Length: 330
Ligand code: DP6
Image 1: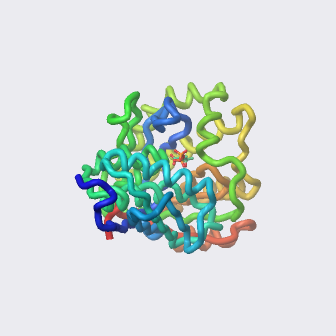
Image 2 (image 1 turned 90 degrees about the vertical axis):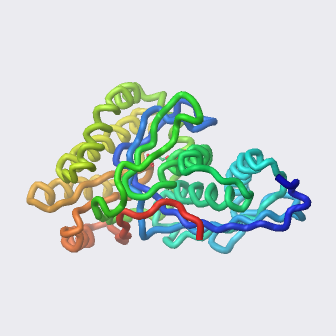
Image 3 (image 1 turned 90 degrees about the horizontal axis):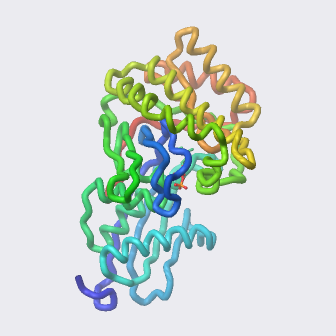
């Protein structure tokens, strides 16, 4: 490979989507490498999109990062730059890069964007650096930027394997997006930046006496979830995903210090969803490290589920996503 100084500026762009975990990742066995305490399963969220361009510019003295047209914070730049260091090391180059990224959905929607961000950065960064990696290797590398990004490399329904070493902790697809066109209606109850981000939260997981039980039972939930997806068994998926989400929040609530991501409206929506499902509506909830509620519904029940959600107090807006594609170059 030519040294950076002699290479003509190289650029590449990629598009990626966030994902919603049906079996959650919470806590790491190795925080630096982002090796998770348990495997997890998600659905990639087509409809919400991050588009990232990476341009190596040998004249730059440090990396630059613009997010939605504005200079990003130093903290965000540092995280991007650390990830670019991994890509530079693999490619054997040291040119700095200009990175610009746009999200198609409002930041205020409170939807975690780091999965889509690091999946797109990994795809675009590797292409711009001239290295070709397999999807599995891209997933492993994306994981180093943000754990959940390992899953966004792939579309549809995806499992990310927990493992004790770097190369063995990658994601892979369980089923493509058209296997089961589920819809995610995201009921936004707060648009504020969360006070404790996921990275800090993962570090607290071990302080909860419930984490060991949650991780110990993960393989059982994973198997039920895999089977429910493969058989398209909505009720089975609903039950295991709600239990898994509650198990993660039980760990959060009992960490030292405790993390309270739910707000009163979060619980009101979760309760309402239980009533609606008992009356035959195909919808269940799952909640990440924030107060907004992901309401996963059968496609034929989407309109009714949206009507119900919009009628609830505290729902500021409802965003829509559906099973979508993995990260790709554009
Ligand atoms: C609650 O992947 O955002 O959404 O690895 O520190 O970037 P970092 O954390 P992140 O954590 C996601 C946590 C979650 C559950 C999940 O997506 O599995």
